[in-house]
Structures are given as C-alpha cells and as structure tokens.
Image 1 (cartoon, rainbow, N blue to C red):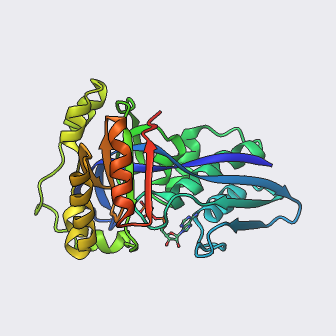
Image 2 (cartoon, helix red, strand yellow):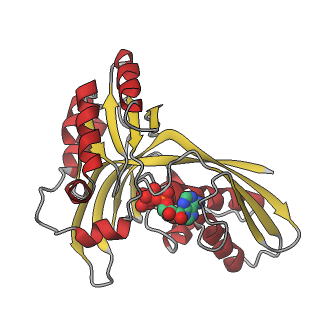
Length: 283
Ligand code: ATP
C-alpha cells in the first residue's frame, strides 16, 4: 500500500488571453498549493483492473474519475498487467475551483510511477497528465508556478510569503466550461501577472495582496451573487485581500496576522458550512 497527498491549489492570478483555434483558451495563471489535501492510497491487485473507492458518495468511481483516467493512460502506455485499487479520501470540496479532481489524478500518476517502478520524471508525468486535464501538470509538480498555454506549460516560481488562507465554498457547484463560455475576453481588466511574480520574488505580502486578480471572477459573480456576498463578508471580517479561485465558486482570503484568523473563520461559519483556515504551502 502506497500513500500520496493530493493538495488543493488556489489561483493568485488568472488571466485569459484569447480563445485558440483548437477551442482551448490561452491562459496565464499564478497558482500555488495550499494545505488542504485529499489522501490517496494505491494498492496493487492481480486482477488487471482499476478499482476506485472514495469517501465521497457523489464522486464517480468509473472512467469519469480523473484518477481512473490517469491510471488507465499509464497502464496502457507502459503495458502494465497488474491491477490497482485507488482509495480517495476527499477533503477538497468538489467542483470548487480548487482542482481537487486534477490533484487526485496527479497524485495517482506520482504514486503509480513508484508502485509500478516506471522511473518517469515529473516532466513525463506532467505530459501524460496534460492529456487528461490542463490543471494536472501543475498538480504533478505542486508548489508555486506560472501556468501558460492552456495551463499545461509550467514554470516554477518562488513560494508566496507565509500567511493564512481562509477558504469558503458556498453550497453551489460551478461548471468551469459554462464560466469560460460566458467570458467576453477584453471586457475586464487583466491581472498584472508580472507584478505578482515580482511580489513572490521579493516575498512582498502587501504587493501580493494588491495584485490578486482573476478575470473569471466578474463572470462567476454575475451568475452567482452568493460569491459577491461571501467576498464582502470575508473583507468585513478582516481578511487582507480576497479573491475567487479558478472558475469558482470558492473564495479565499489572505490573512497575515494569525490573531485575526478565528474571527474571520467563525464569522464565515455563520454563513457557510464549508470554511477552512489553512496555511499557504507553496513549496
Ligand atoms: P478545476 O479547478 O480544475 O476546474 P474543480 O475543483 O472546479 O476543478 P473538481 O473538484 O475537480 O472541480 O470536480 C469537477 C467534476 O469532476 C466533479 O463534478 C466530479 O464529478 C468530477 N470528478 C472526476 N474525478 C474526480 C475526483 N477524483 N475528485 C472530484 N471530482 C472528480
């Protein structure tokens, strides 16, 4: 039995540059992992099959599961004959903009590389992961990175300054495809990606807070007013800076002063069941 941690990610910036002729959007995103993770166990079986077990009743356990797709691809590519049982203990909220499914798939790739002794590099695993989903390459490496292309081109960045991250996930699910479908490129101001990279390089917490921006945020907020309310509440309770992650609906707030965390956490608990106070990991 082998264990892999599958951490969630947040977007410090998310920009969409244009829609490509292949239908994908050209993006530019600064992403970082946070200390909220699913736990994945991999066990070798001799039936040649991929079996998924999950703690969350609503997650598919068949070929629709991204971890299943990752295992299948690896199995076919390297003609693996043994089977595997993948147990996924979910902690990352589903369809939240936190790349939970992508991180499970990435952890499955890393874990199977060890279990099946394939000797693949992270670059090779990321390339395989990109065939399943654009966020998987980032999740293979983890840490902090600039993701470009359709999200699959990864350039490592230094980790963010130390702080707390309060995550709040309203009780709605948002489809990434529908948010991109509603995006009118050029209508909203673009994030300053370079300024965010500089903020990280200088470990400048204030500049990081000032530069948080996500071009999808106004699109999701127009469709789901709950996100607007949560942003306002988070600010009112004292977060230094607040942004929606990915295509939403999860909103996160950055907090430097630990003493302020309980007030924000408890205040938000009055509105939402799913609230997390976690540490930025970023390494
Ligand atoms: P992203 O930020 O990459 O858009 P997300 O965090 O918004 O992802 P996920 O939690 O990955 O969204 O889930 C999106 C959908 O993918 C879910 O509705 C679920 O049915 C499906 N799915 C497939 N595999 C998984 C998995 N291992 N964990 C969670 N959801 C999964």
